[in-house]
Image (cartoon, rainbow, N blue to C red):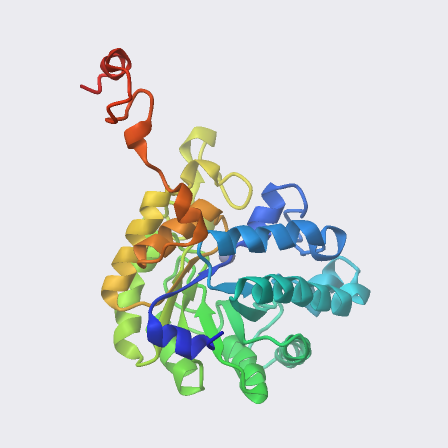
Length: 340
Ligand SMILES: [Zn+2]
């Protein structure tokens, strides 16, 4: 199996994210604290989801340690499961990656305690170091540091990855303000992460395809390394550019995040169009974050010219009983559907 830089040399790389939302929808993880205890409680569920994403075209199996860090576990009073949870998540992901010939990625994420120049910054650094060490022991091929809305925090995560010499993917989460919380623009943040040694820099989460695509051109211009784009599959708009800012008119303008986002879900076609648009800008590391389902991943993979195993079942409407054009379709049924 080639490493990440070698794989990117060959062509676009697809990475499925969004394990938290999908496990929550399946009833194995609680919205609110959003801690991935499912890794210990139901490892078979996590393993199956990894397999479904690979089947749909993911080249990377990202260990499900998102929000599995010390700070999150402290909030639910379970710091004692930190190490078993991380080791188990890595071992589940390693099993699927090795069996499917994909890349095993360790994962670091936003700590939600970091603030520049405080003791919490030191805590974040220590959390990243311990998680990276477990990823190395599990044989990770790369580490994804994701969903950072602070440049400073992302750079701490990157430093921990650089120290062990693994390729780092660093992606920023851009909230409605359009800048990071330490005021860097997304392009400037990516430039700084590239300078600090990241192999791939870009954006993940928070923004849907429409409001992420508009940020990618400047990032592509600002860096010379590969660029990543992994939006959430929700129909964000200029007025409501993040999934947190979406308001549902059918529910009296209530906030849709995080458990009522369904009516805003993008079609697979919209994700395919996003991927095509991002590729045209020169973005070559593509994926989908919170809300992703396998059909979204397949659409992204196919837009990147891939034919993952799931493409065997990509739609062929010519044989549909009413809407099809195949000679075997009864004419009366085509007529009934207004299809002639
Ligand atoms: Zn996400």
